[in-house]
Amino acid sequence: MLNELLRLHEAVETEVAAQEKLLRSPGIPNGDEVARARWKIMSASRKRRDYIDEVIYPALKARLSDSEATMVEALQTRDIAQRHWATDHLSRWPLERALKDFDDYLRAAEEVRFRIRAYLHTERQVLKPLLAPAVARPRIPAA
Image (cartoon, rainbow, N blue to C red; front, top):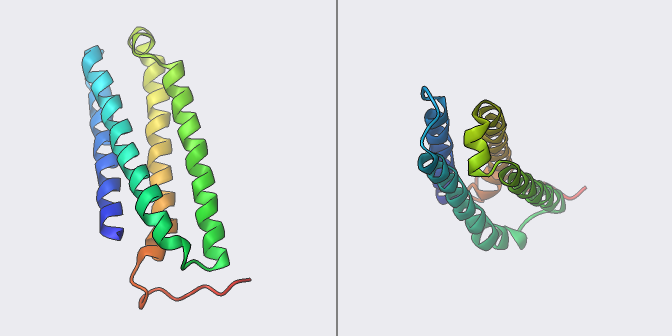
């Protein structure tokens, strides 16, 4: 599970970097390219989220200590907030507006990339130790 999670993280980070490269290129990029880059980030993020929701969380649920379960619940809450924020961003920046107000969109897109990378980092910090082999992972006693 851990290897698949890390692979899915890498896929999201690859698409974020591709969008960054596109938006930092000289001039205003083609609208189709911008739309495709946004779609690829959303698609990679959805695959990661689906894997976590459908595979990782169910597998972890039965074996987490109370403190570990609290960390995972906090991560799930943050994920929901992140999704709402991303949806709001897309609503504020339809493609036509993004191309028309490109300089402002660049700043907004930079914030999106920062938030995605920060969230992935947090997700790794929480889930990686929980997905490590049981022998290498000491059990945290309930408080």
